[in-house]
Length: 143
Image (cartoon, rainbow, N blue to C red):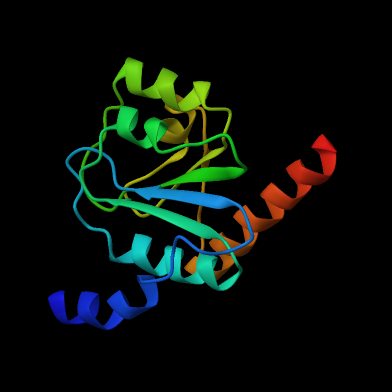
């Protein structure tokens, strides 16, 4: 895993730059499998997004704190850990007003609903395209 992480690291150096929306990327408490999240960030950054990478084992309240006044979304990757979102963390995420997306083999519709989010399926390229399309629609609607 470290070899793969080392190969991906150079692609993350400019993540704070970009003209597009911001994606806050994190794994929930207890989850440390973040390679898919890294790849999601790389693919999203190639579309011009700014990336705030929080990584593994991140409390939901910390995810909410990473949201700013700009435009963006929160993407949560769940691979294996059973996740029980704490009510305060779920409320904090919902209060940001940013859409929340959950993906990975450990996520499901029920967990997404508990966080007020949407469940993602499919490969990473399709997932990034879906989130980008959702954000573009919401920008168009809000204008």
